[in-house]
Length: 304
Image (tube, rainbow, N blue to C red):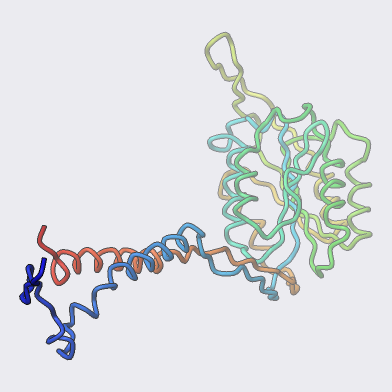
């Protein structure tokens, strides 16, 4: 072609004239949703990591004494001269005693024909009370080994550094089993500076005793035989006291005497449990997601 057109065939608009115009606030918020989403994702990762406060140990000193409860669990403890029976009455009063002495090291020894430790000395009374609930007749061979019960409790106390060490021994019978006599066990307790309080449980005369006959329970009256002389000798040998409990209320009398005992300082290490701290991060993540949605649906909303 010899000639060329001087005018453009297609005209296109340009924005150069707006290059110096001030930016709108929408331009500054353009990347805000992306930033908020990244922040929300990061916070969710922190929540999934389960942030917690650090554990801490604290040493403290409290006033208390070391006590072992030696309880008779022979089948005669099912007699119902105390309500609902001797064993349950003893457990109820023992639980009240434990709750009333939060600073004491307390443990439980059980005996019948033999003896074993149900719970060693502990200041964790919640565990102690749970183990006390599980105490029942029939756990060990039947019989009444008073000497073994005292000796077992003494074994748990002999290494104690407490100035006051006490055994509270409760029984409803006469020693008829075991390799250690009650008075020998008392001498052993005395040699370790352990005071023994003895409690004879049972009414005077006879007591109703339940007997399973077929599918029913029948009652027979059995004579109450408690070797009070031996129990008194055990207490006297160790500078303790002997108590006769013929009713539920009488069982509580021994604790008034124990409260008069000299107390000693115990070193206790307390442990603080972990606390979950994710709530603040979860709330912040929720707010980031909410703010992103609000921006997209209002200020930064675009037409399709």
